[in-house]
Length: 351
Ligand code: NAD
Ligand code: DAU
Image 1 (spheres, rainbow, N blue to C red):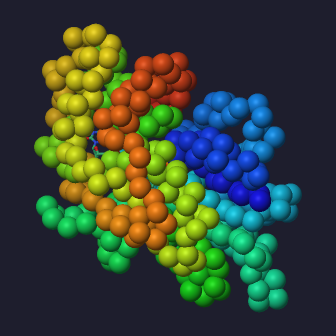
Image 2: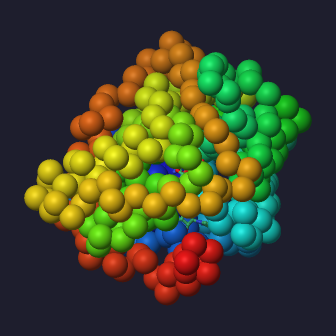
């Protein structure tokens, strides 16, 4: 089976490629990525020799119908897993338009190409699936109690989450209108290797290693539900192969933590692991809060556990230690991905 996987050069996409090629020796992946500031081909440079012939890379933009069509024509694509997106909330506050373009129009371009390839004489080609990788942020924010369920109404607040909700709705519309075989997954915050250092956990690690201040937005008591990236990738694999068409599956680790807890825990682990006593809580700097900052996210993942047998396998401590270890070994990777574009964005917006 040939699967078109978009966004493969980013954080979750690259982790997914490694795991999928290993777990499915009969399948080939067509990796598609525009290589924006967040995409880096080096992230895919460790595919084992014996698996390379089952991975083909296409540089392209999901908003470009010609490039997508050419990829469908060249390879006999039976599945699509759409990771490609603009993914950073802070960037969406400064420049919403690209989020709408990539996340909504790009998803539609993919859906339309898949429909053209898979729907013949009113019948869908057998064993085809379009999986949309979405996020818990489409549900909005929670108060101190409660969990996001698949039935929770969509109530996005940031341009990023609104654009992801828009893409979910167009995916749903293709199912409801054309009976397209689609599955949507909505996951909580991921962490792990290859995450771009603008996101909280790699930002803490990389800045602390350089003894730079750690910006904590507002009071630091916002809550996220953290999941190790490989557990997310296994859930997507299951939802793609076993998920029911038209269904949504929430994915999360039941691992709610306040941001300030994450910051302090990482500083402590980093100091222990490096023996550097200058890595300590003096680096913490409380800064102006993110606009429209969602207070709390927490996922009820009981549906995917019950129906598809998924459970998270990596404990928070194990996942964080693995992640810190990876960033310690890959300091050159960090230097190479922090391009001039990133530095000027960061400087302009955060000083
Ligand atoms: P990322 O920003 O690390 O990677 C995104 C990838 O998409 C990059 O390789 C980039 O080059 C590519 N891309 C961007 N625009 C493109 C375009 N127009 N055409 C083709 N490729 C394009 O993101 P991530 O953190 O790996 O997230 C992947 C997906 O998972 C996203 O859809 C995101 O919304 C979703 N998600 C992320 C998390 C998380 O915690 N990171 C949690 C839940 C869901
Ligand atoms: O919930 C899933 C989402 O998680 C994904 O859909 C997004 O793609 C992903 O970026 C992530 O969004 P968040 O906004 O939750 O992640 P981020 O790492 O940007 O921030 C996590 C929390 O930490 C959030 O409450 C904001 C706070 N924060 C973040 C940064 C970058 C800080 O306090 N300081 C910072 O410098």
